[in-house]
Length: 392
Image (cartoon, rainbow, N blue to C red; front, side, top):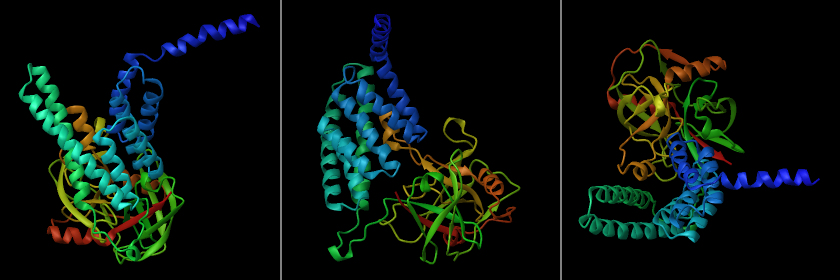
């Protein structure tokens, strides 16, 4: 018996020693990697570890920052109540601007417009104070390294100010109580594939949904059911009862090239912007995604929450990708001191075609036959785009 207890006590100090200043610092890089990869489950794992076990090694503000990352991860996973709880916990620990802005963003997503706006405005006020302070300190910097540190921090707060302004600008006018319509906690976009009503979207759009509904180009709403998924490529197919619209056509024969003009079609910020499909144009910036992921394309066309799963079209109106993610400008600014501009990603159309073929889902493909006017490309994309709403 004593030998068993001896082994137990000998083992316990090793557990305590596993957490150190070096280990807790390493979790910052792990968080950054997870954020860049949009691996929200990993973000939760790492930041929770840091919150529970690293309090003695980090400052109160650094602890609050980790909890704020948790709130953002929960929001991206569609768990808005957990996200709100984390943001509130963050604010109890430290009154940093990020907590207020994140909480305000979540409240706006929950249609609690007045409370959300107040939180964002308070966060913006704190951000402006930090920007003023940093500008003064930057002028008094005594060394190059100190100046670089202050410049990096200033850029971070400028990015936060931009986020706050965006949230405040897109807030719709206050409706009367009778006109309030609570939107689905999460929404995404999809691509009509055939007359049967099969719609291609992202796996993360439909993951964990208790109910799914879709709205086609004729604004007809119908129930949707998941018929195929591939978490590895973040693709899924749902089937809807309504098949109004023209099915999209994929591009075959010619691979996308850097510099090509592309159009993103989808339903960003559903409930805030126009109810129909939105269109944005840009170019292919690279033939790989984060970490040289060769299943993705990097694009400059603006992407917002809700664009996920929508079509990426070439100049002939053919599908060459499925919009999947955007780079988090605020997080990257915090890590690098610079604000990235329109760095977004789409699953390659060739990858999507292989997925559909492997699941026996009918779709059409054609070789490029010419260049269309932007208005015609937009028209083709909009009739094939589908709004997908998820209740978790």
